[in-house]
Image (cartoon, rainbow, N blue to C red; front, top):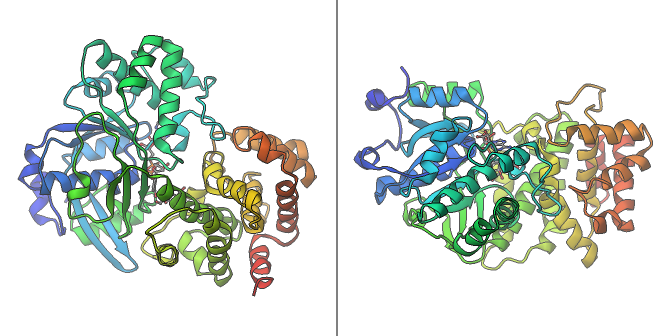
Length: 493
Ligand code: NAI
Ligand code: CS2
């Protein structure tokens, strides 16, 4: 049997939709209806609907998956979240989704975004969905979708184009604006979104630009829950636990955190008032996001590249290697923590918890998945910390080994000479660096440091950084990833 309204009574779930779910109307459009949104914001919003009430149903928009849309509609827009820890799997059925649209269903998407009942348009479109230069934050006007949307604002294709098109309609028709709320892993993500939206609007229409600048707020958020891409094995595990087939399910961890900047221009759900803990509304998200993007995402990407090159398929298998576990904790303690400026958090306890989260065998989080889109992730996950360390005399040796592993990973060839399926918006440029440099590792480092969308001029010109990166890449090619990590750890015992 398939998960659906008719089969809810047969579902073995801790939480199921209630009458509030049936009454609730649409109040949110979410761009980027992916695994993370389903396990995080949609689930927490479902708790608001169930426990407090309110018209907070979500219309999801996806750019990539017709099957997801078909499967969710076949399930009456219900799906389940499997919360797993090692062998345990607890199932919640989420009833906050109204429907899912493809971005290509432009008029229907814009219809919801223009509707005064929609108070929030939120996003998890991945770092590359902002069509920006990660090193400067500027909108990439050469991006094909941006070029299209500037000429066809009534039929946008990019997330930025959809936002500005709907804002423009609301402005022209005297409708209160929605709050654009980004939940992507970007530093000061609200400011990143604001900058690219304003740069787009200014190029389109000065008057609209002035209105957005004056009338709309872009809250920052820090979001945290590890949600690997769903596999067929996950679907089978959920079916066994739920008693129904759910093709839209996600499996995640018990941990969840959401820190939201209190900058809304319209109503919002009281996410912080539900039974789901670790949701807080504050006026300064920056210390929380630096902590998370550097300690979690920085070591995630470290394990992604060094772990993949060492032959480890998942984070859980990578962290099982004692040398990797020691290396990751060293990075956290000695190279990343000095750059953090957060009060009221026991960082040692936070780091202990991170290691436990990585060890969770219920999550098959592939190193390959985390390794994707490195040019969009490296700046906030490695380079922000390295900049701080260069200015403050903190070692960068470990992070340079991780950075060198990224460089080797994107060569597209692993240590056994086999092809790596590199996924990155700059895949061609990365391959060109290797083609032009050949086996000359000095030229390889020069080629990577010349990538201005990743390394800004100042960092690329720092001789201490360049020398450390050069040394790390040479060690990596001489000894391999696994032995390089082992030797790094052995030298510090
Ligand atoms: P996913 O692959 O399941 O979903 C990505 C969504 O973004 C899909 O709907 C896809 O159609 C859309 N998308 C992809 N490229 C796009 C583009 N260029 N323009 C517009 N939409 C685009 O990924 P998932 O796991 O939902 O993660 C999405 C984002 O959520 C991440 O990039 C990250 O910023 C954030 N996040 C993810 C976490 C996780 O553990 N998966 C945890 C914390 C944050
Ligand atoms: C991961 C993140 O895929 C990746 O880049 O590092 O999605 C990570 O799972 C989340 O940020 C955890 O909150």
